[in-house]
Length: 111
Image (tube, rainbow, N blue to C red):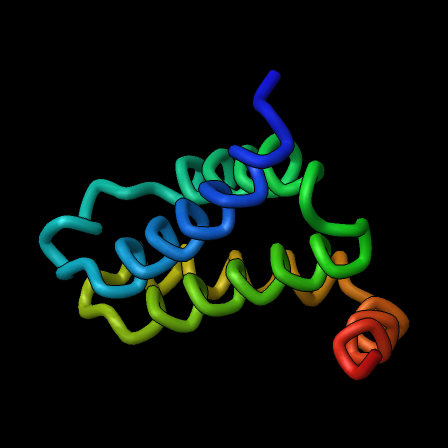
């Protein structure tokens, strides 16, 4: 689909730009940004884009960390619906994550 050099150069930068945009958006701009859109965005980022540049365990860890970051940010917003969405995101990460996932990602980062 994309050239390996293009993927290695632009996908990490695109991922960081998307993460920064979401986490620095104002409450007004996130008011209509539903949890389903967040889920779709995260699935696309990690199941389509990052599969070519990250190993599975690192990718799953980054996916969970992004979900937690967005969930925590949503919890700080004034809209009740966003707070509920944030709690749902955090809850889904807790359900899908095991201790082994984080231990394996820590070992990969240390090496």
